[in-house]
Image (cartoon, rainbow, N blue to C red; front, side, top):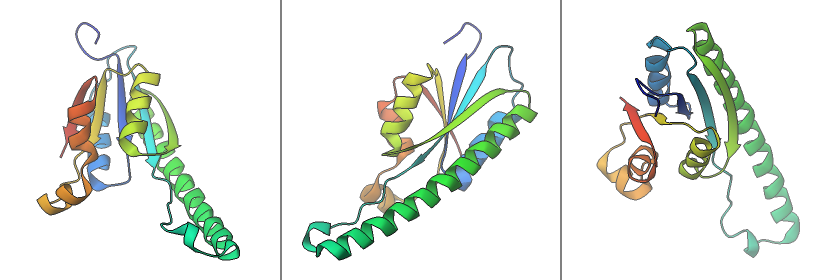
Length: 154
């Protein structure tokens, strides 16, 4: 971390209301000179369970449809990230963005390392206790596993 603040922020953007609030929060901050922001969107890969049990032609058809859905989700994430970068640039930030496919926490932590970020900004989704227990929370896991400070915006 730079003296007097953060040099490089990384915002995880997933399209949720929480991530939009995190983006809006950062966009309202006065950008210090020389500071940069990277906006990262992560698309979880499509997995069809029990594919090995299906006949080859059906398996191929389902795999093709899953690839088409994943491709559409990547394009949506790219549009979302591009809009976020433009919003941050209008606010005076030096911003860049990118989309990756993978497990959200792992991809965010890779991006933190790749972009030498010293603050990870995430939106809190506000999921309930049962959902958190069954599905986990990227924000909760980031707080536990991130090598840098994490700012959660509610």
